Image 1 (cartoon, helix red, strand yellow):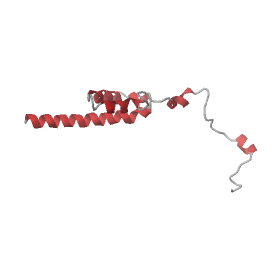
Image 2 (spheres, rainbow, N blue to C red):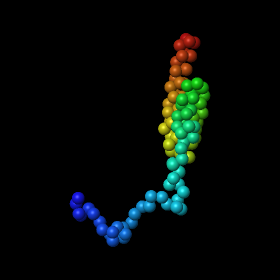
Image 3 (cartoon, rainbow, N blue to C red):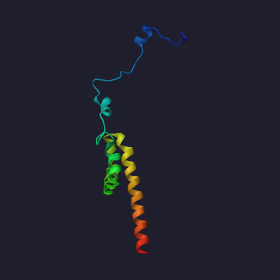
Image 4 (cartoon, rainbow, N blue to C red):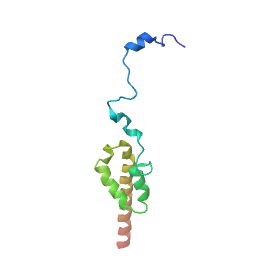
Length: 102
Protein backbone atom coordinates (compact mmCIF):
# COMPACT_ATOMS: atom_id res chain seq x y z
CA UNK A 1 0.00 0.00 0.00
CA UNK A 2 1.23 3.49 -0.80
CA UNK A 3 2.47 5.15 2.38
CA UNK A 4 1.70 8.63 1.05
CA UNK A 5 -2.01 7.86 1.17
CA UNK A 6 -1.93 6.84 4.80
CA UNK A 7 -2.32 9.61 7.36
CA UNK A 8 -1.24 9.42 10.89
CA UNK A 9 -3.58 9.98 13.80
CA UNK A 10 -2.36 13.51 14.50
CA UNK A 11 -3.28 14.74 11.02
CA UNK A 12 -6.66 13.05 11.19
CA UNK A 13 -7.60 14.79 14.44
CA UNK A 14 -7.02 18.26 12.99
CA UNK A 15 -9.07 17.75 9.83
CA UNK A 16 -12.78 18.38 9.53
CA UNK A 17 -15.07 15.41 9.20
CA UNK A 18 -18.78 14.86 8.75
CA UNK A 19 -20.54 12.89 11.47
CA UNK A 20 -22.75 10.02 10.37
CA UNK A 21 -25.73 11.11 12.47
CA UNK A 22 -26.26 14.48 14.07
CA UNK A 23 -28.22 14.47 17.32
CA UNK A 24 -29.62 17.96 16.78
CA UNK A 25 -30.73 17.43 13.16
CA UNK A 26 -33.73 15.10 13.22
CA UNK A 27 -34.16 15.07 9.42
CA UNK A 28 -31.17 12.83 8.78
CA UNK A 29 -33.13 9.66 9.50
CA UNK A 30 -36.41 10.73 7.91
CA UNK A 31 -36.13 8.20 5.08
CA UNK A 32 -35.36 5.31 7.42
CA UNK A 33 -39.08 4.77 7.93
CA UNK A 34 -40.80 2.40 5.50
CA UNK A 35 -43.27 3.82 3.02
CA UNK A 36 -47.01 3.48 3.72
CA UNK A 37 -49.22 0.93 1.94
CA UNK A 38 -47.21 -2.20 2.59
CA UNK A 39 -43.88 -0.48 2.00
CA UNK A 40 -44.39 0.30 -1.68
CA UNK A 41 -45.75 3.83 -1.27
CA UNK A 42 -49.06 5.43 -2.04
CA UNK A 43 -48.20 5.99 -5.70
CA UNK A 44 -47.33 2.41 -6.58
CA UNK A 45 -50.18 1.07 -4.44
CA UNK A 46 -52.69 3.28 -6.27
CA UNK A 47 -51.15 2.31 -9.61
CA UNK A 48 -51.89 -1.36 -8.94
CA UNK A 49 -55.31 -0.65 -7.45
CA UNK A 50 -56.10 1.62 -10.42
CA UNK A 51 -56.54 -1.38 -12.66
CA UNK A 52 -59.58 -2.23 -10.52
CA UNK A 53 -60.78 1.36 -10.09
CA UNK A 54 -59.19 3.83 -12.53
CA UNK A 55 -60.42 6.81 -10.53
CA UNK A 56 -57.50 6.20 -8.18
CA UNK A 57 -55.14 7.14 -11.02
CA UNK A 58 -56.81 10.52 -11.25
CA UNK A 59 -56.70 10.98 -7.48
CA UNK A 60 -52.96 10.23 -7.44
CA UNK A 61 -52.45 12.62 -10.35
CA UNK A 62 -54.02 15.33 -8.22
CA UNK A 63 -51.66 14.37 -5.41
CA UNK A 64 -48.73 14.55 -7.83
CA UNK A 65 -49.62 17.99 -9.17
CA UNK A 66 -50.39 19.10 -5.62
CA UNK A 67 -46.75 18.30 -4.76
CA UNK A 68 -47.60 15.60 -2.22
CA UNK A 69 -44.12 14.16 -2.84
CA UNK A 70 -42.55 17.05 -0.92
CA UNK A 71 -43.44 15.12 2.23
CA UNK A 72 -41.39 12.16 1.00
CA UNK A 73 -39.48 12.36 -2.31
CA UNK A 74 -39.59 8.57 -2.65
CA UNK A 75 -43.28 8.93 -3.58
CA UNK A 76 -42.56 11.03 -6.68
CA UNK A 77 -41.93 8.14 -9.09
CA UNK A 78 -45.07 6.24 -8.16
CA UNK A 79 -47.27 9.32 -8.37
CA UNK A 80 -45.85 10.28 -11.76
CA UNK A 81 -46.53 6.72 -12.99
CA UNK A 82 -50.17 7.27 -12.01
CA UNK A 83 -50.28 10.50 -13.99
CA UNK A 84 -49.02 8.63 -17.06
CA UNK A 85 -51.52 5.81 -16.49
CA UNK A 86 -54.35 8.32 -16.17
CA UNK A 87 -53.28 9.98 -19.42
CA UNK A 88 -53.14 6.67 -21.29
CA UNK A 89 -56.51 5.62 -19.88
CA UNK A 90 -58.09 8.93 -20.86
CA UNK A 91 -56.76 8.68 -24.43
CA UNK A 92 -58.01 5.09 -24.69
CA UNK A 93 -61.49 6.07 -23.46
CA UNK A 94 -61.68 9.03 -25.86
CA UNK A 95 -60.65 6.85 -28.81
CA UNK A 96 -63.12 4.12 -27.82
CA UNK A 97 -66.00 6.59 -27.46
CA UNK A 98 -65.07 8.23 -30.78
CA UNK A 99 -65.10 4.86 -32.56
CA UNK A 100 -68.44 3.85 -31.04
CA UNK A 101 -70.17 7.18 -31.69
CA UNK A 102 -68.84 7.83 -35.20
